[in-house]
Length: 452
Ligand SMILES: Nc1nc2c(ncn2[C@@H]2O[C@H](COP(=O)(O)OP(=O)(O)O)[C@@H](O)[C@H]2O)c(=O)[nH]1
Ligand SMILES: [Mg+2]
Image (tube, rainbow, N blue to C red; front, side, top):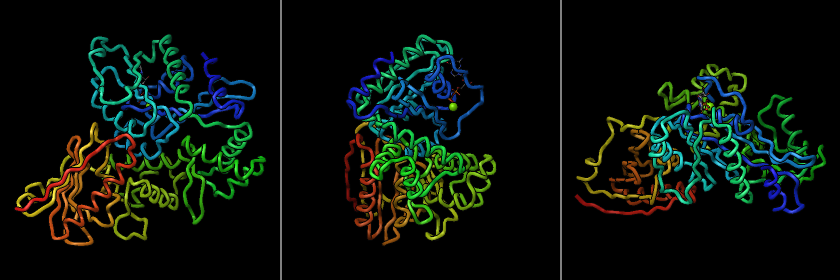
């Protein structure tokens, strides 16, 4: 099985001896993601206990084809299964990644598969769907036709993760083959010296109990390990592509930041907000949330402010009120899904002069488009009523009100008021910006001008 992996090195003939890549395991809570993460690495690994749930992302390293001076490290990310964190995953979903979606074979999970595929497919990465049969009725599973709307059709596989050891080995081969056939787009070459540098960096983070270091400190570790400035830049780029670190301004200089730390912070706040049904989170709320999650020392007050800033930058949230203070963030994706009871309706628009714009996607609407629109627009559009699939927004630069609704494959926008043309074209531009992130989603706009 492992000999096939030599192709990785043959492909980049003599250039590099090692490669790193990532696998993200996604799916609903309890589907078997953690079980799979452990058993991909070791088919006899312990199964997780019932109720042992994952918060944020847990990383495992799967070492393949380990030889004296050569290895393929697969960084397996076991992602938490709560639906509310899907958008958070999206921020850290990176290009150099194979996605495995684990479907729970005991339930009809076609809707969920649909939802997730839509989420993953937008990133343009390879996908495998694994149905965890777990002793479920085979005829039920075979009748569960999965959506055929995705191209190319993902690979399907089914097994009982606990019992089917032979199938687990077969699945390992499928995963390895998929990594292999996508090597050019998902593997990052790592020379021996870069690997040594990466270990030194990991140790630095561990020993200093730090979650981020300045770019200058990063370069110092590189030069201590005889890595040139040019190579350290390339190494950082590779590590960012693999999702280990990202670079961000912090304390007025660029810092190399541990992705896991920031992800854990975001997930904790989003979970807490969802649980408390709070979509506005103050600094004090966040302190409470981290205390509750036993993460108070990892997220002191100053770092929470930084976390707020990052959540705004990744368009998960916006700062309420004063733009200069980081005291309260609004996270629209935590909003309830059902329509706000006091919100304006179509009727409030269709009987007056208004403009109507519709954006229709060819296949499936990516998730959380409206929360993103609300975040991006927050300076120019004051939210009157918000829910996860819609919003009533007041134009702050003129006289106009909009109703934005997500309905299946459509985003429908009604605008009224004397500045409606200007406002609708701004909203259109924002939608274009959002959809430009989804390389594979095709969409069209339709317009109507209506006079009562
Ligand atoms: N019998 C059996 N139990 C399983 C199987 N897969 C997962 N489990 C159990 O179901 C529970 C949830 O699995 P887990 O991997 O933690 O799900 P996750 O929430 O998706 O990470 C754990 O107690 C597992 O031991 C399976 O194929 N067969
Ligand atoms: Mg888990």
